[in-house]
Amino acid sequence: MGRHVGTVSVGIRLPIIKQGDNLADIVVDSVLAAKEDGFSVSNRDVIAITESIVARSQGNYATIDDIAKDVNEKFDGGEIGLIFPILSRNRFSILLKGIAKGVKKIYLMLSYPSDEVGNALLTYDELDAKGVNPYSDVLTLKEYRELFGYKKHEFTGVDYIEYYKELIESQGCECEVIFANQAKTILKYTDKVLNCDIHTRVRTKRILKENGAKVVLGLDDIMTSSINGSGYNQKYGLLGSNKSTEDKVKLFPRDAQDLVLNVQKQILDKTGKHVEVMVYGDGAFKDPQGKIWELADPVVSPFFTEGLIGTPNELKLKYLADNDYSNLKGEDLKQAIKEAIKAKNGSLVGNMASQGTTPRQLTDLIGSLCDLTSGSGDKGTPVILVKGYFDNYTNE
Image (cartoon, rainbow, N blue to C red):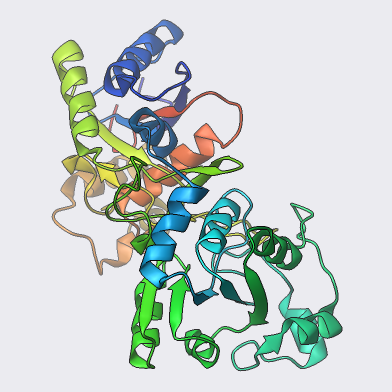
């Protein structure tokens, strides 16, 4: 009898990771210990490690004072335009405190009706009802309040406008809030800009520079080197950071390619099995209720082994069943589809039989699966073992 189970993702429990821990050894030992629960390692399994424990083992942290010093030096401590931040206590509030501490005045420009990852200030219906065009209209805080009043976030219960304004002012920094969706709007207020968008940051920087900005930096340009012994990320700066304490953030991990290769080698040496290994953060998916797009990290996976490069190359079974083999059923249909899978050769891009398969990077797909499996709370499973991901209908 053939297999009855396909892909399985399993949360692996680990000890609480602290700075200086030998993470590779802990991950390998914990994955292999899962054999006691019936989960042994097979060829082409994927071992995925949350970015959080990688950064924690590295001690990759920065304080608001570290951030303030870097911002102060890069903007000469004056006034800046801070544009397109996401609305998040976990992701941005501590960064904002550090930035505010390093300058005298912030023109805080919020995108509306929502931020880049879908956290909403308003709905489009509310904009329509007031005749506001978010693509062209610029609103002051006074105008915004007169039109829309005070509105708290559906899930967090926070009025982010007031929250961010108070955070800035708590650091002795003056704050003026405006609402706009065109990056160049900020240049009417100041020519020094810190753009805080994540996935659109390159375009935003280009637009600002083309329209006369004198200083343009992104979050990826802050904390790119150590400040007084702090952590840093040379590629992503503050992007991908998370709140650690009320005055400290954990940065996105750095220099972890050796980690994934080490775990891969140890598994091969101890079991004879060749696995793939990746570090993952946020998955890339959207919540249909809150409209939040999960990916607040700059990438899903910053480090991964070679076998995870590329995209799926799969046939759509229901397409084959409904089209090529619509005249077959039962065992004949099963065997015909298996033969079609075995016969696939090279890239299936453009092949109608592959339409509807997910055209995304393997690391994004697997990272999303792992993020949903590990959760973000108290499950205690910061490593995920994914079994059978690269199998198909022909594997017995």
